[in-house]
Length: 580
Image (tube, rainbow, N blue to C red; front, side, top):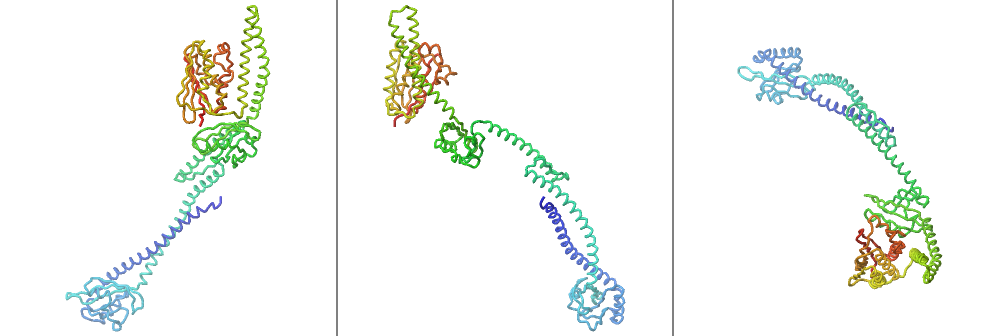
């Protein structure tokens, strides 16, 4: 690893620099302290010597025998190693162990002399000696008799002696320091190495993990904080390894699922930039891929509007169909929960559309081909029925006529549905729905009365006109009222119409008939689906009436819903666009 030992060097250097800095500070402080202590020590020694020799000089001083005093001072000075000076009360030097007193200046102004003459029992001073031409330490004590202060005795020693003593002391301390420093440096080296080994191990392990090797473990060198960190790091590494394996497994499974799905899937951000596509999408649109925008390879206004709507709204799903370059696709656009991302699913329904168109063409062609023979059969059966026939023959002719009429109705209904399915544009205008409802009701009043039923019409005042196709509305309400009459035996059929809001009007057709089981309500608008097949055959129902109603509403911009309770009746509610 690059700069592997840099942290160790920095840490070890930190210990060394700090140790040296502390040593310098220590030596400066120690030198000052030792020198100060030695000055104090030498001062006390001079004081002790002075007090000790006073009795030996007292007689000469009191008798003023300065010749004998000089000899004694010189002799004692040699024995104690200190310079001795005797000064009278006027500051005149009367004896000195190293110089001729007569050649020496008056000492009354010297600090230590002034202090003793001033009444101090002991005084010291450090200054340069003009006589000996070196720095000296002076200590003075009073020479007193029964008559009082008689003279001042001063002892002095060269500062060289103090400096020499201090130097020797410091040298001893320095030797001790060198040994201590060596031990400290060695200890610092061991501690630094121990600390950095753990940190280097963690650093190497972290680098390996950052490169994707989650099996790497940090070595544990001690049971200290770094050791505890290494244990936690290894536990974290195991956890990350486990999570990544789980993520990779999930990712692999998701990849397999996405690859297996035949529908094209896109994951995009809120701006439509592709983040992920599956293989099916790449087959549909080879130009699709991460980093591209959806509109770059699939331009369709309705589809783009759906993307914008979902992207700007809450969690919702929009579905629809689009045509693009001779292909048809159904799509679903959803927003990822709690994220600004979109999921788009595309299904190629081109073949389904083609099959549906073939199916429609077949139904149309078959219906047209059947219409003529069925009409002929019904006509011939009706003609034969007018003849004088045996009872059994007349019965069979009646059955043929009835089934021919039922087949004719099926053919007509199939043609109606087919026409609605292929219809791209319809003639829409403002239509008086109230008038159409009344006309449709009048068509079935006789049939209803034959069954003892009443058709009630309830039109709200101020009912708006609908913007729809007039012929479609006639088919719509004829089918709903016809259906109600067929499946109602007692009671009444009620048609209500009113304004729902500014954009729609609402029409409901209610009956008191047999009702529809809740389990079958969702299927009643399917082709040929009948709730009661026996009744449907009896009444001539084709199972296409409600399917026609649904198709009519789809092409006219309306919708229908049904509510029913078995044995109590059914209500169909139609919503139609109101004219502006």
